[in-house]
Amino acid sequence: MVVFPRLDLRASVFRATSSSSPLKPERLDARRVEAIERPRLVRQADAALSAEVKTITAVPNPSSAGGLHDFSSQGDYWWPDPKDPNRPYVLRDGLTNPENFVAHRQLLLAFCRDFDALAAAYKLTRSERYAAAAVKHLHAWFVDPATRMNPNLLYAQAIVGRDTGRSIGLIDTLHLAEVALGIEALRGSASFPKEEEVAVTAWFREYLKWMLTHPFGVEESQQPNNHGTCGWLQIAAFARLTGDQAVLARARLQLSNVLLPTQMDADGSFPRELARTKAFAYSLFNLDVIAALGVITSTQQQDMLNFTLHDGRSLIRGVEFMAPYIADKGAWLRTVYKPVGKRNGGFEARRTSDRMQPDAMYWHEWPVRQPSLLFGALSAGRTDWFELWQTLEADPQTEEIRRNFPIRQPVLWLS
Image: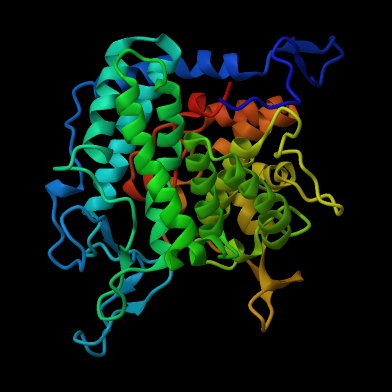
């Protein structure tokens, strides 16, 4: 899959010690990740062998403007107006409405978790039983006329009384980026014949075209925050799967020329995420997604995680900013301050005197095994980040954390 060009898989990196003993050589590469992940991965894949194959057609949404094969969801932070329940819903940022329709999202996430585990296990073991089970899921979601999902998101993130669907709904398919890598891993399997591969890939090609041409997709890709990042990660992953090198090159330029310079502050933080009521979670999430985009768009000639702007900003700097707070979340509350907003919607370099508060929801559930730590460790040779990554929860059970943890099987991302 992706090779980090700065890493020689035959070489060693060194961990500094506080003693006077010689530095200890230690391998830090994809093979080491595979060895660490293998027991967990095989255990998950074995459980996924018996998982029910189930798509969105099993749970129709009676309130959706779409049809049986159309993915639908409702905006998380939108609630009935307390002054008049018959009026359009109102926004309560950061507070999830548990009554909103999310069944399709839950089905998609369950499919992604099972498929990703099966595809990753096949990559490591070459056992056809994992591939065969994975292909059954692919066929149901993307090929079978009776159960497939339509390749668009016209009805996602709807708001009662306001919108039947919105551009930000594209974030609901973020987890398909890892599915695309899993499909690549299945190529060559006897259980994934060429005609099936062509049919599955055609779905992603059609969805990619929709993302690049429909107003929803265009608008989402232009967002100056995590929504834009998520849009471009999907674009890049689907372009690589379908062999669209021109679009993949566009994604690489978007990362270097737009996303990195407009989203990241000089210290490696993301001011627009810091301004949210769940600033810690959003900062982790955006860093994970933009680091994954760096992995997807890297080439043998250019490691995009180490691509650096003239003022020193890079994806590695982003990891440098967040790693201390992943290790010590209390420091986030003591040392990070809210950004100062500008009238034009941006943020100034200076900060307010307001320290960060715990996130409005799920403060205690973060961090988990953030992939940005791993990608940064492999790219920069940082054993401290690698060791920190290993100490974190790899398989969170809280649904909201799972939804914002789109990279669960790192072996699919590494080579």
